[in-house]
Length: 231
Image: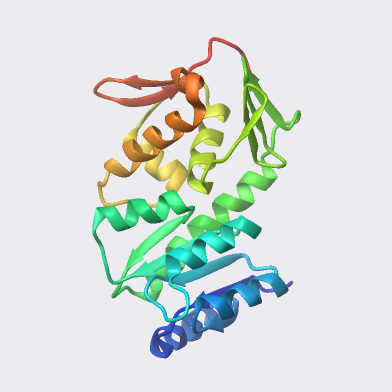
């Protein structure tokens, strides 16, 4: 069985070695890069299951590196940073980061979050609709390509926006609390930071334009996706 390939992009050798040693024991195949430019070259040459990306690096910082990665790949990205402010986390999610871990962190926490992302990604591939498409009025979600159309216009969603929308369309008319959405879409306990859900709901509604109406706020409970049509 082939090992899952992971790329660490971090200028701190100590951090890279700590992560590599731990993940290698867990049967991952780990590559390293000390800056964003070298990391991008490795991404072009290899097929990675997940990328661990530091924010503060020479030559090209993590934000810029993430932007460049998203131009060529939808590979899951975990961002590492010494900054834990909400603004930084939300900025990362808007760029297309799948998760955000504040330094210092434990290898066990990193592995748990990695496994949640990889498991979620695998389930998305395995549990595709037989028709491979969801359509309601002018909103179309293509599960194979992960393309989303609004009135025949292809729109750009971050990976987390797409996962949230995909979860909603697979569970139409069901009410979910913020905690349930965190568990189902993010895949782990977000330590009660329900603002993350609200922020992504707002981003997704803005992206869906007039079809924002499908995402209903259930006051005192959470949200549900309701179109008035059957899937």
